[in-house]
Structures are given as structure tokens and as C-alpha cells.
Length: 266
Image 1 (cartoon, rainbow, N blue to C red):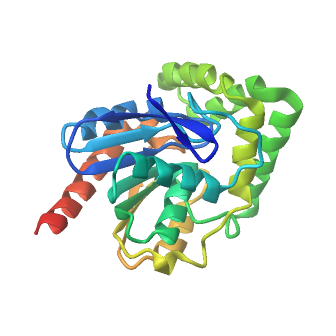
Image 2 (image 1 turned 90 degrees about the vertical axis):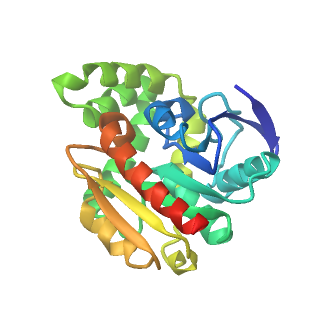
């Protein structure tokens, strides 16, 4: 897996396929490998870039504090080193937040933005979701990643048919560096671009899982601020939609991206 220096640390990334670039940004505690189903679907048509965000996967895990803007700058520098001036971006959860920060700060960087179970900040989240976030942080601080991984994966993949996903997720999450994970977690809870969404002029697709942490109504509340926003529901899915419903996610992505490609070449 290639490594490149951004800011003061190294970021790991992989590239697949050829064509118009599509950047995939994973969520908290995940890594680029978790996009495998999307890589297989997209790489036949696009040049797919899958970085491991700061503190995750094979990337460096510098001491905190972290910030969403700092993590976004890592990605902007990576794109510059790859000589990518403009691309499509797909972000899951925290990856979607990083995508939004980049789109706000650099409005010409993206052809399109796809947000999967993400949003522009936690200020408008309901009390139950905020409580869940703080419970997760407390569990990690007191008991570490082992207990947290079991509790989280049971919530993400609760069905008997998801045993393999749950077991794989537990193993993967336990490999996270505790301090880096907490630094990234605390970065996202102190971040918001809710008042700046009008700066994003490119088309935005919001994919909302039917059983995500945050309700569909939350996504409906912010999508109206985009000039060109579309909302689609992922049925029978929870927060990790690219893993628990890869076919639905891929179908929506391929359709949306093909529409944007037609607009670009038309």
C-alpha cells in the first residue's frame, strides 16, 4: 500500500481502475479496505482512490488533537500529489464530514458529492443520538477498544445472517489505536459546516439508511440547503450501508455518477 507525506505525517492509499477520479472516504474506525464492494463496482468505470484517513488503517497515527479541517487538508494534499484537480467524492459518516469540509473550503474541487449516513454537524441531532455518542466515548476511555468493538458491531450488524460481518468488524475495530480513534471521534463532535452548505454548488447525493443512527428527517432537514441535492433511502440498512447493503449502495452510486458524467461530457 503506497504511503505519501502530507502535512507532517504519512497517509496510506490505494488506486484502482482508470477514468474520471472517484475518491472514497471511510468512516470513523474504518479504513480504505472496507470499500471493497464499491471498489469492485466502480473501478470498471472510474479511477478509484481509497485513502486511510489520519489515525486509521495503515496511515500514521500522530498525537491529537485532530480536526475535520486538518483531516480534510490531508486529503487535499494527497489529491494534489496525485495531480487530481477535480473528482467525485463519496464519504461515509466521518468521511462525509471531511468531504463536506473540502467542498465548503474548495468549491471547485468536486464534480459531485455523495454522503452516506452523514451530515454537516451534530448541533441539530436529537438528544438520543448525542447521548449515544457520549456513551461510546466513555466506554472507550474506561474499557478500551475491545468492549467497544463488540458493542458497536452488535448494533451495526444485529441479524443472525450478519455473523460474518459482525465477527470481521470486531476483529478490525480492535486493531484501531485507542488514542487516535478518540482524537478522530472528538474532532467530529466539535465540528460543523451547517451554516455554509450554500457554498456547495455541485450536485449532492445523500444516501440515508432506513435504520441509521440519525433519522431520515435529519437528512431531509439539511439537504434543502444544497443547490442540487437528491435524497435516496437504503432499505433494511443501518449505519454501515456499504457493508450491509452493498448492492443498493452500488446501484445508487453508479446511477448518480453516470448522470454526472453525462453532464460533464454533454
